[in-house]
Image (tube, rainbow over all chains, first blue to last red; front, top):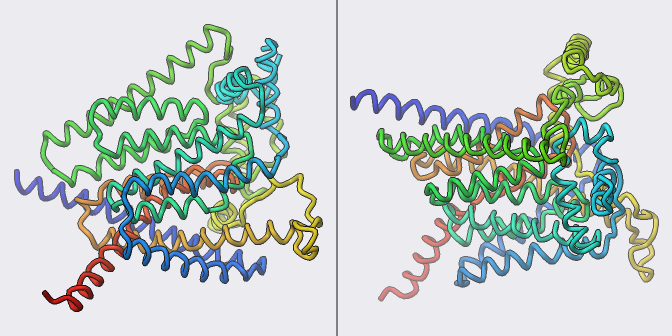
Length: 116
Length: 379
């Protein structure tokens, strides 16, 4: 019984490792493809942003290590950081409705008008 | 009569979203409210990223991940688009949250309800359910006892059975009431495969085989779709090259700004005082920043997988749910139509998964700084 248990445990562990191998392989391939795309379209400033981003994340992590922030504040700050760019974008960029989205929107308006 | 249009009789799954929009328009009468609700759904999704990641990575790592997702430009660029992706993703993430965090029977039923609502808006719950099945199997490692296996299996199976029941019931109800005369399923599921396996267009939308949609007999349509797919595959000179190009277009192409910024006059300056800084330059910088976050994401995912490999799976089995979801999503898009916009669904999983990396950073840093403090204050 214990032997069977051990074998099953080993089997699940192997499945988990296979999952990880696939994830690493696909991520490595995608990473390569992304770098290839950046080099092809010659948007080298991506690498500048990457370095800046890593520096900002390192500084943010240092800040989080050094200062104890109450856990409740994390949720409020997440809401704030999430809300501001999205709200600004929606209010400032007045995207016209087009394509399939327009078809769906017009259907919704027809429904409201009683033309289903 | 919009219900009679071919778009809604073929893609019937779009109908519930029409009723959602109609409901909001009836209540508020404004398109802006729909966009503001998009923002609200996105914020909830962001908070859910924090709450799920907190479960195994702690609050600090989860917060770092959530903030990075909040400034990641790709979802922001979609916020003003009236797509069903925002509301659907929020419900699916809520379903995942109830399934992953303390999955009691009550929460499993809540998870099922959320998956059903998310699927009603955009049918992507099947990917989540596939990942749940893989995760249930992996989670046996936590406690390999018959009692545990039976409970975990029955919870997942009840969730799937209830989901199928709710979806069937909703479809029947909408059919009976005449709200969706053809139901709410996809009446031409083979079309996505015709597009996805089109080796000429490399899996992106093309009008070449659109005549298939006009065939009303499902059997004939299915046959024609099969013929189109086998023709396309026969003409393909190299299958690995096709898959390479397809995955590159789906997972590596620069983010598309055409969904929300197509109306912007690109040569116009952003500020009159700085005439050389045009909208073209501003948008290109946003897209470049997006790519930088995206590349960093893949570096961190590889690191996260290495960490998961090195640490025992028992304590980390929840992270395997997201690994499975990413892999399922990746393999599905090898077969069906691709657009960079379709990455939107899976991106939160990437962010949640790499919280593992930040968790290790905090663990190491805490040890280092505590040691430092002890050195300074030996008493």
